[in-house]
Length: 240
Length: 121
Image 1: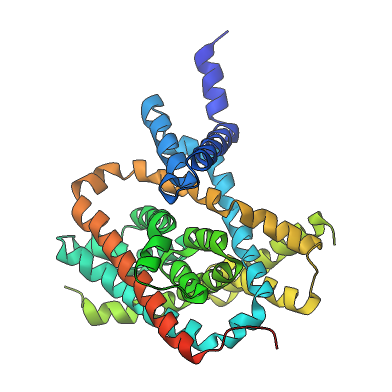
Image 2: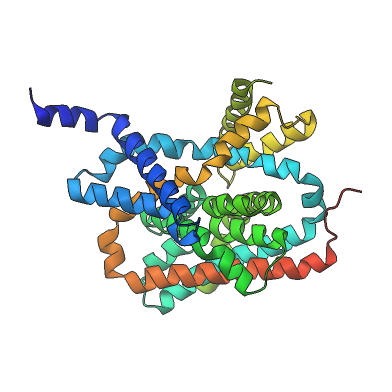
């Protein structure tokens, strides 16, 4: 009988990361329901804090957690494909709104890159940090690839991107309401365009229309940001 | 179509998306192109709400937010860097996100005056 070896064997299997993630999310969901579904108790926020706490206290590395954790993240791909579903159910509406979709997402992509770079620089961030911030509005696989291309710190961009999404899920709808943005199409476009998949998950809870426009906005802003980021950055931040 | 059939269709769309992105070096991730392919498939087949295509897709979307938890935990890895530069990182992220969100929402709502609502005709 060797408890250390037994623990090591369990930790090296994907079972650990899977169980911890599902368990923490389950606790997060229960807490969220118990507190009357307030956005402040967003289940992803609770789950992330719980897992980070478990890892910090136990000394288990993030890499070890990811053996199982990455199986869950893998499902992001098929789930992104499934975002075609709300789009399909709202297709008539989406087609009629082509003008506001393209117009708002195009301008939003440019503003996302410029504001990410400039605000970070103004606050004393290094060029490397500002470049890591520039692509944060778009879905993680694109933002990471873009950060690598423009000279940012790619793993930091991944974290910033996901945290941006969580912030959006928590305070995004309230902020939009505060500024009297009430049209469900506009709300969806804003959530998906500024805060990708987690924003879209939140928009889907609001209404199918908001969800459909959010999924569309996420896909479109990923494409436009990839195309414009190089041009925009050479314009506002010529290589020093 | 059964649930498994629906899952096969979704995975096939992603697979085709990833392949085409690699092949033509497109500037977008495979799953986003897969979403476009799946949308075309849905528009062609016009499945009803009981179809496996719809049930498999909805099944994946119900807990979409859960799939972001593992990358979010990565924050612990960068805790030191973030702690050192918290002002530009945290405030920069929040401010830039809010500006972008409100810009897209504001412009969309302005343009919405020219776009009719999508009531079926």
